Image (cartoon, rainbow over all chains, first blue to last red; front, top):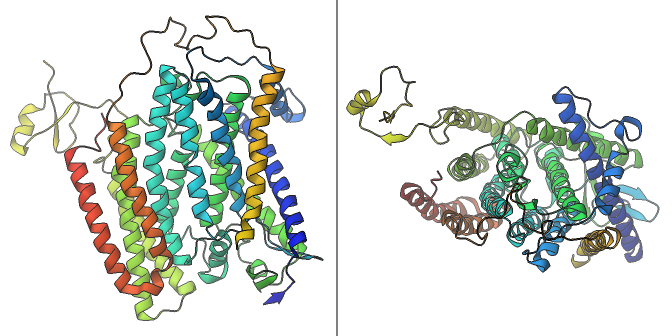
Length: 435
Length: 118
């Protein structure tokens, strides 16, 4: 226990204001830089140069883009519902910018005025706040799709709403094992559980949760391979087809800041947040205003943990971009089948498996700690292996190859229906011969 | 505890100002010269055909209903998950009964083809 001293109400307000402005600025600048990073990475993967003319390494490109977007003429479709058309980009951007505020980004900082927690708002509802706010984003997309009065936009909006709500279920369910292990929903406590409570990053003891959360987060942020709402080759650009100039930019900012928050969340929930691996010196948690449990807080530790957090977040951001330029887009039916027929049952089953494991461990009387984590790791590895084995069988989601018209037939008849020389039918199904 | 929400309020206000500011700034700065063709809905360059406000697949409606059921399930599971180690096996059995009912519903929907997209 280390007493640093609590902040006075004034100091709390001042420090909060500084953190709010700093985090807001960092998020906005990072989002601008991410648009450049995305283009540079895509160029790198496709063996091109990418934008490199404006400023050194093209670093001023986002500013040029922003200026251009704010000065360009805005089109407003004649048949659009004006009010909702203008409201939609605002509804998508506001929650996207707020959500980052509950993610802890460094170890608590001791100052002469008291201990400053390195999270904008350490609210008791923690992750639930993020889940609640990110689901508001769907309103922006549906409003944009509907109010544009454009068929592409409408289809994009419909698809987006169905996709977002489908994956929100598995996103929420994949978090439940984390809550079970931590016994709390605030993110600083989640980080603490990974540092000292269990002593392992949750990517190991809750491996399948991590896997499901990453997939759902990709779907929730509308990134490839789940970018059905945009689907350039089918829907022009989907729900923001009619948007131009700054309003288009706002959808972009919303998408990228959602991506940033999702990356930060994945790092915090499953990769230890700002924890530095194999070092006990940074394991601390604020238990009461001004009181720290664990190691002693220090300014240098705050800076180091901030770096650690940035590295982990950057890893997930690069993963997003890497996947985008590697994996092709799903078909819509595959997206929905994956969401409802794979992710949901698997997430539910995993919740039960972890619950039983924890309750059994408690019944045996194993102390909560590293041993606990190792048993959970073993269970998770086994469950993940079974999951990967099942999903690899092509039963629930059909592959990307053109689908044959499938008719369920009884075994003996199957052989008769298969035309000689045709590709082999999927077991249990038969190809209907062409007339 | 309630004062911990103050920073949320601050960042919400900043985000709101930012969002409104972007719309207003671009409205003031950019030229606005609409023509009938420019303000027609974009349909890949051809003259718009028919109305957008048409009927759409009932599947989307089904998904929305299923979402309400399963999202509520998630919300109900969260308090149990947080207090699971305190509640022990009794709590687990109670949740199992709840989950069984919902799983039977999911299997029914599945077999009925409500989850089938093609």
